Image 1 (cartoon, rainbow, N blue to C red):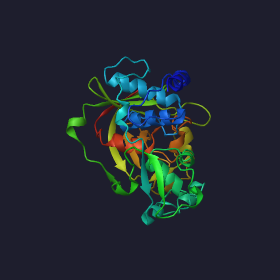
Image 2: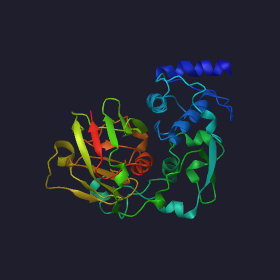
Image 3: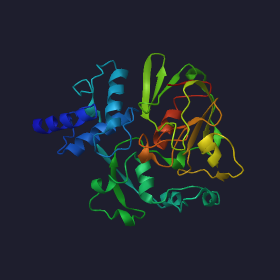
Image 4: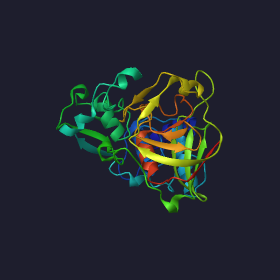
Length: 321
């Protein structure tokens, strides 16, 4: 076990974080230790990105922010101060239901064809499961080596990470969330260079999640620096797709109104700012958060943006640097 932890420490130091020893469920491989760490951070809403059993950039960033939030030295070194034993069991199980498959459907590539759909659903059931349990679909076969994941049906049971499920069927219909007066003094900090969003209540860091910001160049708009306000938080949003707006910030004569759904370009929730066309929102590609470039907005994994929406409100300040 000591040799394993030494290897893990050296591995995660590259990502500016080290792996912990577990107290209850003792891992037998590097992947299992890493997964336990990712699950722990996710449970605390210090998002490590999609759970995939691999050390990486956002695992280290999430760990450091967790330490900072709890008054621990910001070292990235895991020790007895971090209650990793709270992750028990490490995995849980989910049995597919017939109604789950109602969230799966054809997703055309072109906006003009997407506009004709009633909803933009998951292209396959693995993406439904992956988003529900914040896990990369590529990692699911490793967790379920005896299942034929290409032919799943109702009644099949899968091993999945023990995280708070993202239950898309429980999302409210298209609406604006009511304001919560006691949250208005909270502040969101956006760090474009670090690709991180942090939520503060005074000096207290409440949560931190990875984002995909916009960077100038290559046909993309830059996420604007400055101090802004949240104008409203919309659930199940539609999206007006306009190439001119996306690339130059100016409306063109050709646009398409894309229906709501988990594979809508802005995901399942829109947090609009008092900067026209700019917001914090979900995504149609949660596995790529922090690894691509947006068109000026700030993309967040659907499971993170929904949990974040329960801690924020209209009228809050958003600081982008």
